[in-house]
Image (tube, rainbow, N blue to C red; front, side):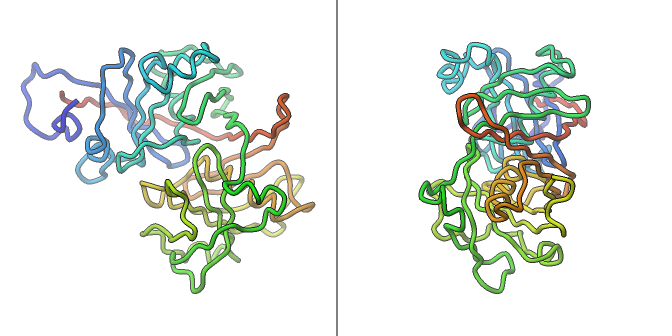
Length: 315
């Protein structure tokens, strides 16, 4: 694909080849999706940025290419151990940079595969897909999808028992630096607690918050405030906002919701829960911690996915 393809703005003849695309979102976290069953679509960072531009392109927090795993180097590496992972989610941030994982994107990606007839997936059934954060198992629910996000970890292994803070976050309208906890969900997150919903709403996320020490490849930064009581009927309830690495503030972040649940459970100790409802500007996500047969603890993310319109890019 060319710059002209990404912009879809220059005059073209009726005979110009066209590439279909779909716009979709998961709790307001929105994406441009392209099906590439033959592995022939190659997107440069600048092309992705134009596609995701909300004024000069289609608009989205990211771009997802649905491509058979055998056509992608990272996908081929997964197929040896997971031959069932036929499809690979080639995900790019809105600025064109490559991201390891996107929890909302996974749901929208699988919904796209199912609705476009690329896979058969009825409610109650599951599918395994490839991502740059490894294989993920996604189950179709009556109203949405649940993803086994795999095991979580702290970015700083020394925090495995302390679970307090390992970073300081500056700016975002905060009067003073705030302690934060860094969590990996296959991609990096820095979770910052704030005292109230009013404080949460008053944050300035038009610029990336400063994190010290900064992870080598950047980080998503989530700010979280708790409901009172924190846990009701066995379910923890929190509200969050997020500044995504390479994107800016988004309506939702699936891996960010998982990281927030990890941090809040750690901070709340015995008063925490293994089940959480995380409110984001675009809706509500469910996060559950489950024991895995291999002895690790996995995080399961559940939420809706919607496809909102189709179109064509000119080649």
